[in-house]
Length: 318
Image (cartoon, rainbow, N blue to C red):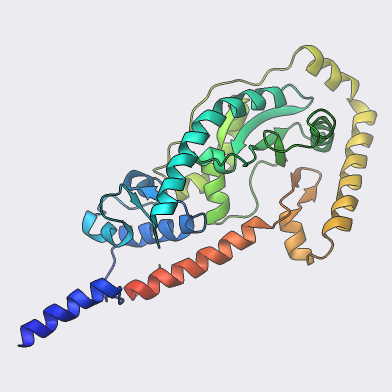
């Protein structure tokens, strides 16, 4: 009778997902971290994708991963559902359609004065898009003219695109003298390695070298390679010449001051710390993330990790 009791206990624990006390390998812990992170976006992953976003996952086995899979599916996720799987598949199809448009738009952005490199960021850089999603761009500029470049791009969006962000969301700028991203965490590392360099890829290499820490976080991730070098000719060359010297310096300082005051009026309810992260406004960097997305992601990531830790009763930190 004793053996029947143990057998029924094990079957019951599996059926109702009572936490099982097991010792996870480092690779399994890494997989848990990855699945906890992408649960935030309800974004299921294939096995090879779990490995891409982990450091030590070569020994991952199907027995362990079965805790995160629906029978018959190639996708894995924490609290996985058929709805999320279907959404992921449709989002991948939409991303393939929109990538061509994103690359074309990135090269157009590269024609603006002082723009030295452009990369696709956001959800499209991760192979997922919804029909209503924006195409986000990360932009590297000439030192001392970041705010000139940003203001010209925003003005173009407001005037010619009627302020539509769907294919023209320019929300993060750095200059070539300050390429290292200040915040170093899982969110920023993920955003950096998934960037798709689309214009000025020779300049973008300098950015990659300045942020080696991110690529060391995900050493198995292979960044998309698209070779479109930086070019400076025609109208771009003339405009940069015209805005050189004191005129360009004065405009850059003026545009930064105007933008900062507008953001303060609109988002003054944020405390200084959150405002500085969401609306980084300095001579060499501009970030416009109204929802303070980074803070929310990291907070939810910690919560998801605790849930998974509780499920497996980890003996060491995940």
